[in-house]
Image (tube, rainbow, N blue to C red; front, top):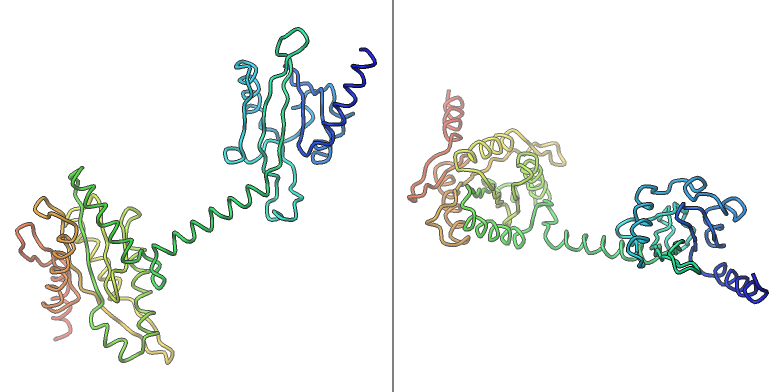
Length: 340
């Protein structure tokens, strides 16, 4: 090598060593030909320890199979390729020392793979450029988490942690549209707490809120993951049950009714508050032209339950008739026992 080329090489290596990025040059056998200061500082592996040796024999925790495939692909295509932190947070498992993003244990990295030509014009080496993007990743992740929290708050009822009325109605509209396309069974349940005003008047609004929260908790435990529950307003709730007929839904409402009936909330002086709920069921059918009508018919079944004595479920049929659910029979038996 001439004096000029040696001087050029020396200058080039100085530039590489002062870059705020990791530079690794490998041959096709993954032997290391360049390992700059950035790589030495973060890996703790000196140039003397790694030069001329296989990268995978010296550096621990590398995604070997993935990285070899990435290198092979870059050589084959003879063009630059990339790896972003969103897809793979890190390639080299470097500890994060950044004070700004100190909550991240490891350095988030972008990596560029560049094929290098030899003097003969053949692609014989590859350059891996490793960039620390931890601060950017931290900011983006924080923004993503903040947006997710804001979205959650915007669709969630604060007291019950069920969907709020606005979002739940949007879900109801979406499910109605889905029924129009697929014509699969779908049922709506509306229910409210019997004599809830009396609870508030007797024990206060704090106790009333505790009752509402308790019922919301029972709803969450009773419903399936696919069911969509929301607080419609005050003491009224709605549950959408996709893929479910009115008969099948009756089992859900009866289970829910019994759980509420058996549960109680204690107030400050130790008094136990027991409440019941009245429910209405309406299975979606072709005669219902919009989700508002679906909601109205279900509400009418709910108020039929209240009119007939509360603590029961009423089903509204496709013909518009009211049919007591299995719960009414349980209610009658309980009434007989109380009288005796």
